[in-house]
Length: 147
Length: 93
Image (cartoon, rainbow over all chains, first blue to last red; front, side, top):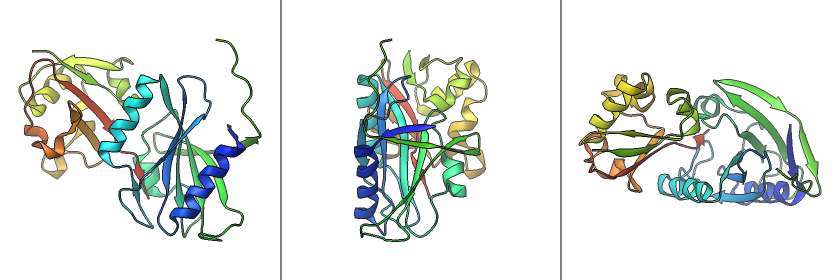
């Protein structure tokens, strides 16, 4: 299950609407081992495409170095589909390379750049196998338990 | 000649879970061959022999923060103390 707070959830939807008809992409980082999506990082889709997304390689390195310095990991990796459902494509499955991450797919096919419901679904993608999981939308993430 | 190589989560099955390993080589190609001798299987995840033995399209390798695609690819040269980072692309359709 993915537990995510409303502000982060809304920010992902807003990013997807803004970039429509191109795919939007980004991550939500969180402290290593906590499974808490705390810090949204919108990335530029270097492919600038309605059917493909890719983080720019230099920005990708900068992002990971920042996470390593903060003892963070990518808790959520998200991107949008702009003409199809919010389900991982064959390419998504083939390229998924963060076995610990929740892969979030949103779809702007219904309302495009406009307000309106946006499909928001979450998956685990491990060794080519997709498992959809429940999304628990909360007002705020629960207080961090002492470790 | 020791070069530190940062290994991404998905390839740590080849390094007994280690986040970084040490290798040697005067070029990236030689470094990968050296890694392969200590961590069998890892080369195939980095290099695509069906595509003429080039780096895989969706694997990024950096030497001292420079994407090796801009500095010679597998022939990029290495010096003692260089830092190599391997990161799978974050991409999809």
